[in-house]
Amino acid sequence: MEQLIEFAGNHPELFVAFFFVLGLLLWGFLAEQISGVASLVPQEAISLINHENAVVIDVREDNEYSQGHILNSIHIPLNTLSKKLGRLEKYRSKPIITSCMSGSRSGRACSILKKNGFENLHNLKGGIVAWQNANLPLSKGK
Image (cartoon, rainbow, N blue to C red; front, side, top):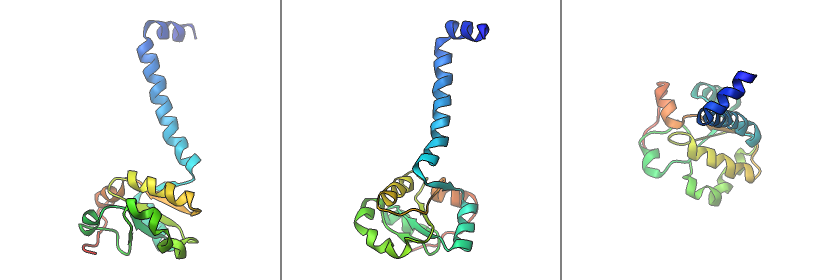
């Protein structure tokens, strides 16, 4: 313990950096627990789609969506999601997977859905990029 205190005194910037990184790691772990939204890798998403009839909502812009999307996904761009929640009412009891290009916009979509009473929410971790990296097919066009 004495050596740790001595190290912290001699290298305060390293000590602060260590706790900063530790805090970021804990935040990443706890954020999912607190938000109530699970992140899924593509293989887990496929399992949820096949076994529990999960619905995929793609929140990318029109041009991104038309370049390739998950088969049977529902396209609602993030900036219009709040206005188009009525389209999703019939899926309220089903698991919902949100997707975007990298997973960040879909995380915001999960927050919007959560605030509007949707509960069984999942975010596609890594988005369509992760889907493609897993060599999974995309459907083209609208």
